[in-house]
Length: 487
Ligand SMILES: N[C@@H](CCOP(=O)(O)O)C(=O)O
Image (tube, rainbow, N blue to C red):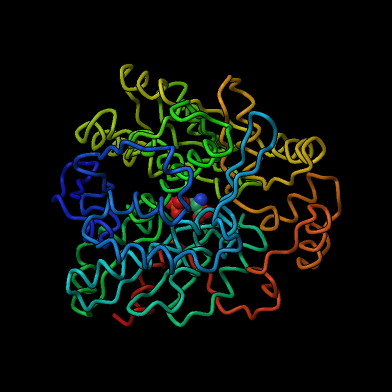
């Protein structure tokens, strides 16, 4: 399959180059040149496992890899998941279904794609006959960092670089990142927020002089963020799998529409749901659930994207984002590259842009959007525990709360993006319980409350040695990177 840039000013590339580049040279994001469709046979798919559905989706988007290669990638990527089904669907009540995407090695949905991306990327490099070492740049507001460090841990011919905000991430997220012990890891806390870190990554990825220097040293950049097409495509798999499973469990009849609510930060996860719908999955409304950084809620209501506002540190840190990169892929779909390039220029120059009425009405046809602040999020955690005996993490709680704002007769799929163990202190507080100074004790408390064992993936995490202690201003990242790479 061929891929083009959302801004229309970069060469059309094949899948291998799209994976390797991460971001298109014009600053845009790669999207399929011709978007595929699949005539899904739900009678058949309901009996297929996650890997079989993964095979169907990956081979549709990345036809440069053979079926055998894709089978190997999938088997290797998901072999360490805690749950043999890889993802679980939990029925909260007769209408609401939670899609649990947190059974991977770092307990967040990011594992779904970041366990697979290293295989896709290294195979793409090999396909291109390159001997370069790939430097994977990653900005994180908490979850992507840990998952990227785990996925790329000691993967030959890669270096994984993670920038995270020094304030806001949970104790467990910080521990996952600062204890990463792969020889190819470079982790830096930045004195800035996620948006600053993401902007720095995009600037590095499109710095032509730096690219030349890198090339001379046999190095190349890519990214582990959802700006990379290799992050997005694997995220489509779980929406197709979820639909098939809901048919199997008689929650849906084949062809019946399913509404989906997604806790949203960088817009990658909900964009993957939108792409699943474009592919042919019978999806009704998509609900964009935000926290107090509700730039997207305002955007879907008014058509004005206004990032010129104060940044809030909330109880759902992975969603503390004001510039949602993947929205650009959705805008491309409704308005094309010229409009996208102009809107993105406005965003850079004025921190805001405004859609025309037609584009806005197209967005509103497919999407709902609302937000829940930290107080409402805590209430939702408490209510859901009392009424449904289910412990939500704060990100999923945002989506559960927002989902209630849009009553519908359809079955609801609410994406559960992280495990409550990952945000033990926030969850305990929401339940009116005191947390301990020892984070391990808090994991035990969550285990007692939920009746679930502490996931093996994090056992002993708080005994691990802290390796990465660097804290830098954004302006110093380039010098630091040059030093780290020896260029
Ligand atoms: N929510 C993210 C922010 C980065 O998003 P990504 O999906 O583009 O990697 C995080 O937890 O880091």
